[in-house]
Image (cartoon, rainbow, N blue to C red):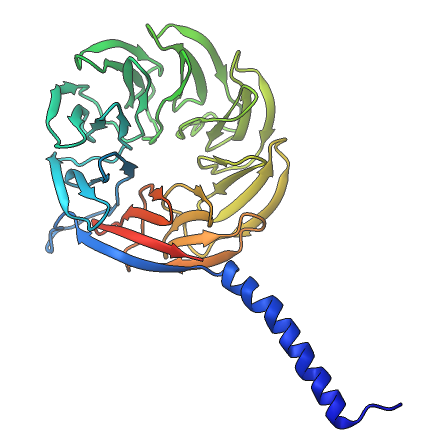
Length: 372
C-alpha cells in the first residue's frame, strides 16, 4: 500500500529525531567549552618599551592548594581557588625554565642562572641561591639528592637539594663559533641524567658524579644547527625520545643510546607520549601523530605557529599557538575548542582535574575550566 503524505511526513520527523538524538550528544561531547574562573595580572608590563619578545612562563602544581606561575618578574605562588597571591620571588631577568617541586620545596632558576629553593607553603628560602653564572631557560630535573640544570652554552649542573652547593659540573659542549640558544633541560632516568647539546650529541651521565655512561651523535644533512634543543622524553620499555631540529625525532635505547628508529623531519619539537601514540609539532606549523614504532599516523596543519609545548589531557591535546590555546582530538588532530586572550601563550600549562592554569604572554595568570 502506498504511504500517504501524512505517513511520509511522520517518517521524516522520526528520522530527524533519531539523527538529532545521536548527533547532538556527540557534538556536545566533541566540542567542550572553556570558562574563565579567574584572571590576575601577575606582572605589570611597561607601556613605553620596545619588547622584542613577549612570553608567558610555565606553571607547576604545588601542594597546599597552590600553583606556581613563572614569568617575567620571577615566581608567583597563587591559590587555586581565587588566584590570590601567597608569595613571590622577584628576579630581574625573570624565570623562563620550568620549576620543579619535591618534598614541599620548589626549585627554580632565573634566566641569568640564579638557582633558588623555596618552601612551597610560604616562599621562605631554603638556602642562598646557587650562582651558575650562565643562562638557564630549559626545565629543571630532580631526583632524591640533586636538582639539575642545563646552562648555556653547554654545561650540566647538579646542586645538592639539602645545602644548595654545586655537587658537580659537567661540560657537554665543545667550543664553537656559533651556537643555537636552545631551551633544553635534563631528563632524570633513575640513576642517570640524559642531556642534549647544540652540536647534535646526546649523553647519559651518572647522576652521582656526572661521569659519562654513553654518548650518541645524531645525524643530519648539515654540520650547522644539529642542535638537540629539546628536553628528552622517556618512553616505556627502556626507550627515550630525542628531538633534533635538523635531523628529526630519534627513539634510542636508554641503556646504551643505540638507535631504535628515526622519524626524519626538520623542525621537530618536544614530543608528547601517550599509551599508544607520539604527538609532535613540526616546524611550528603542523601537528604529527606517530605510533610507538615511529610510523606516521596523521598530520594536521595548525592555525598559527605553535609557541608552547603540547600537553595530553583527558579532554584532548592542549596546544599553545599564536591565536591562543587549542584543544584537539587525539584521533585526528581536529580542533575542538580555541580560546585566546589576545596575546597568546608560550609557557607550559598545568592541569588539575578540569582546570587549566596558564600564564599568557601579557603576564596574566588564568584558571580556565573545561566543560564537556
